[in-house]
Image (cartoon, rainbow, N blue to C red; front, side, top):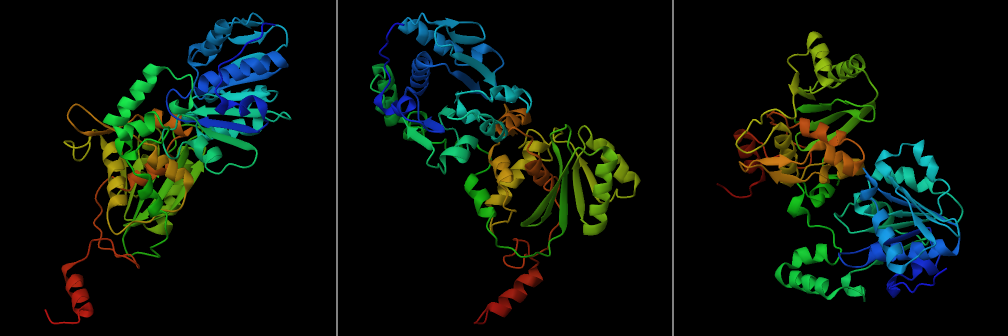
Length: 441
């Protein structure tokens, strides 16, 4: 075989020289991660027989994979022992094979084909959903197998960052690599990076230095506000109970009830694979037990049938049907009801005194995963729900149920036991002032 001298920066040496269960490289543009991974794998594949799976979240065609990158590197080095096919790459001497798959298309049965993999390379790992990782990690189970991860961070809560890099163990190697660490970085890229550093330091940190994107740029809801709402602060409240009911449309979605009293969101109840009558029965029991002032329910798709059953049972004064895509109450400010309700969550989280949410990491991921934009009329619009599902690997059922509790105003004179919610009658205000004041008015 032709001997090659690959241009692999020294910072990537552990890729080939040391054994780790997970090798995790992240950073900004022009760090050379993809080239280093490709060259390292090609070299390893010439030394021994390996099954190497090149993975990403979505692969609609082979063009979406690193197939072309590997083929280009094979051509660059003139590696005649490798044969490039449309859907795979084989080494004709060692028997090494590269395969290419999208994780989103792999169900629990199909993904078993990866059990014999020696090295799994996850490219563009910032797009990998929590669900995909939870399925993949235990599947790569062969003794001595490794998972290689390369990514440019998007947000603070990127699923693989949280699952792997935030709290690494001794079997995990993590390295941040940027353009300034790459001795082969083209001068043109260095020029562009330095230009960005001078003109837009914030963008420079994200694009070129691998820092997560500033939430305020695209996110509707700030992660710090959600974290603050997870802190225990309200024991009880006299505010009226409002329940949001997000009804599942598909097999993996969950029908979810959210319980909120003013500044206190106390709990969520979720159910899966329930038909209309079963959901209506659960809702009936909840209404009879908890006596909510309002139950706002999504009546798109399957929800319309549940609404009709509940109305026929005499709950018309309590239930309200909501279409996420219908015209907003404030149509001059919001593209649709969905944007309006989600923005009310955002405002609720930012207002004082701080509200309280049940500590739930799935809820956190759902709330902070939604990006905002504005239509031609300047109205707030949210990214499509399908895009959110791609990021999460599931529907944002918890967050949608919470959003439904803000569908319409519910008059609230309630006061939390510890804080109060900003709505207090004039009589209560003066009584409180007289009681607490040490001087005359």
